[in-house]
Amino acid sequence: MTAAPSSEQLPEHQRPDGVSDETIKALGTLSEAFEAVESARGFLYTFHRTTGTADLALGKAIDELRGAGHDDLASRLEQELLGRNILQGRWTFQLVEEYDQNYYSVFQELERSAREELVEGRRHIYEAEDEGARAHARPSTSHGPAGRRRRSSVGPARWLP
Image: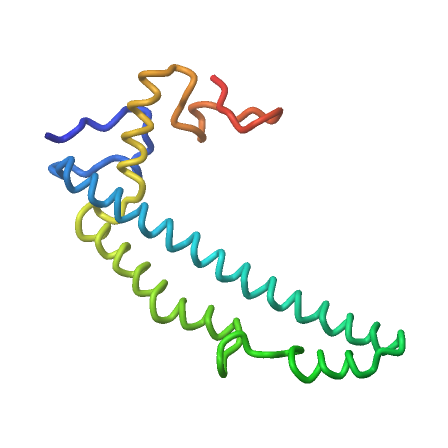
């Protein structure tokens, strides 16, 4: 059974003719998986940046310990910890690069390819149709931007008629 596109949906979120509910659901699940990968990638970048921030602060602490007359402790921290690889022989930026090259970019390309092959490259069809179901059930929800409704500039994000 193929759901009829909502007249409120933007064309890029409408399913092409003849695409089944099962295909839309599967692509929605694939999109959900890729969004989780995007989130993991963000955590990895956060890990990279936070580890770098910690190393810079460690360097400052070493300088301050030396200034306070604690040369032995400062030297130990400097020799054993400052600039240390988080994994044997690798820094955090290398983890980010390997993740991007060996996993993220492959996932991104295959997800895009699946959409190109099955729904003319369109994105978020499953979510747009699900949003349509919620909008009919609760009139306070809407399909969002571009001439249909405007966003409130006060308080939490919400759409106004």
